[in-house]
Structures are given as C-alpha cells and as structure tokens.
Image 1 (cartoon, rainbow, N blue to C red):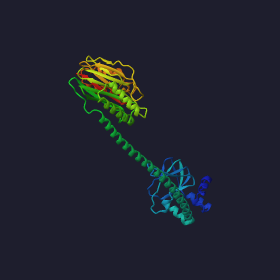
Image 2: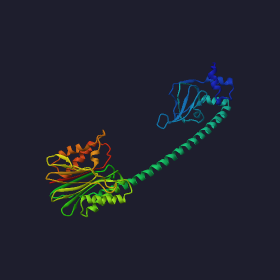
Image 3: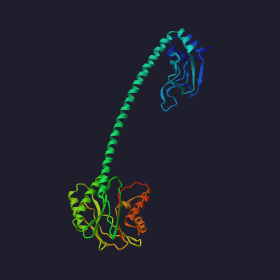
Length: 416
C-alpha cells in the first residue's frame, strides 16, 4: 500500500519517529488505521481508560481540562504531525489525564498499545525519543505552570489588597453611619417631644429629612404671660454641616426668645450673633412668631422664609400678604417681614419649608403651592396634627418614590 506523499511527509516530520528509517516508517504508516472526527467531536475524555495514541494527519485538536464545565481550562492545540494520548500507553492501565476534542474536521492515525509495544521492540530508540520529548514538554509545562502560578499569585495579592481596601472602606462607612445616627438622634432631641395643647389651640408638626440629618427645624414652646412661641427654619444646604448650623441657630433663637422681646428683636439679635460668629457661607430662613392665647393674635417676623398659609373654617385657604425679607446670617442689618394675624374659631395657621413646594414627582413636576391649598381645603374640620400628617402623606404619594432633594417640615396651629 502506498502512502500519499503529503501525508507521509507529515508523519516523517514527527519528532517521535525521526530515528526510524524512512522505508520502515512508511510501512508503519500503512499498518495504522485512520479515524475521522467532526469539529466538536471528542476523541477521548479526561478519566477515560486509555489504550491508544493519536497522530494528527489533518485538522486540529484541542487539549482541555474539566471539559464542558464552568471550570474548563484550555491547555494547547495540536496540528498536523503532533500527537496526543501517549501517556496512556506508557502507564499500565493508564487513564486519560485530559480531554481532547476536534476544533476542526480532523483525520487521525491511531496507534494502540500492542502496536506501540511492537514499535518499541523493533526500534528501541523510540523510547529515547519519547523520553526526550516528554522532558521537553515537562520543562515547558513547568515553565508555563510557574508563570501561571506567578500570575495567579499576583492576581490573588491584588484581590487581597482590594478586599482589604473594601473592608477598610466598609469599616469606615459603618463608623460614619454610626456617627450620622448619633447626629440624627441629637438633632431629633433638639425638636420638641410633646407639643402644647391648650383650651384655645391645638398644635401639630412633622419633619422629613432628605438625608439622615438635615437642616430644617421647628419648635413650639410656652412663654410667660399665656403666650406660645412658634418657630420654623430652613438652613441652606443639607447634611451634617447644615445640621450643625441648624443646632446653633435654634439654640440662639431659643435663648433670645426667653428674654421676652418681640419676634423682630429676637431675629435681629440672632442675626448679630451669627454674622459675628459665622465663618462660612451658610444662612438660614426663619419664621418666628408669638401666639397670644388670650387675644388669639399671632405676631411674627419672617426672615426670608415661606409666608404662612391660613385655612379658614369654610375650607378656603389664603397666603399671608408679605413684604421682602432676607435670611439670617448673610449680613447686618437684616431685613425682616413683620406681620400680625388674629386667628378666629376654626382657623388653621400652616407654616412650611420650601421642601414641601419643591418636592417633585417622577416626571420632575414640583408639588407646588396650589396642591397644598387643594389638600388643605379638604381638611377644615381636622385637628392640627392630622392636617400635618395628611399633608405629608399626600406629598409622599405624589413623590411616588422619586428622590427627595430637600427637607420637608410642617407646623400647624388650629384655633378651637
């Protein structure tokens, strides 16, 4: 039987058979069966019992570990003249140490164990050639394994460093969260736990910070001579800096309010303190007023804050007339809007921060003043706290999960 020249040349170029005389090698080739495999076919699988080696005539083979699994690892490819599966012939009852599959349509010569042993007896130099080739492969494998190990160690070190950095960041984040919670608790402690409840008036309030701590504040507190102090404020910006500024502003207002002066005088004194002490660009809008329980008159001074709303017993809502004013903490002297209103039976005074009107729905449309008025018009018979609760619930429903950009604070005073 004659071997085609091209295929014979392929076999002649195989290092394993280089010491076999050419005519005898052609004879060997004629004695080997040929098997055909399609692209993707497995020649053998890892762990299978092995009884033959394969020499690539045409095509290409892939050697892989853990074939077909998520851990599959590609080792190398074999083209014409290369061979696979020889380890199973060397080791008695040897098992395949890797899987081999065709990556192209391939034709392979097959040499089983009996034929291999026969070749060793006829050409003992085959053993030396195989040992030499296996040594080269072992060196190459060791070098590849070394480089792979170095790369994996470097990747492992990088992953460890990233994990350590992430852990440090997590620890720092948890520390900051604990500190923020402490700050939030302190801020809440500044706000009144219980609102007054008199024979003439009921009071209500709600606050919803945009962050864990915010810059809004309110207070309702008793003064001498049957009077009630009512306060609401909104510090520019949000977060911890505004919360600290809020605490300072609230403390100064409360300290001056105890002296017994008018709301405008309190505002002027506080502005003087803040502008003298202030070393940043923060400022605060404030509305502070005094409610006389006997006369039912509410006198207030407004420093750049939202004008209050009045809801009458018939459900009509009006915004208090107002003149220009400026926030506290900008400069001296401060320009204030001073007003007085008398609350008749069934009237409700509503104070709010601009977070209420500026809150937006998922489409970006602001809640606005008119929606506040419409909501209030349905609540003339409710007490002050219920009015605040309903307003805030309506706002959150309108917001519908969209981001809250500003603190929201409400204070209501209901004339019984």
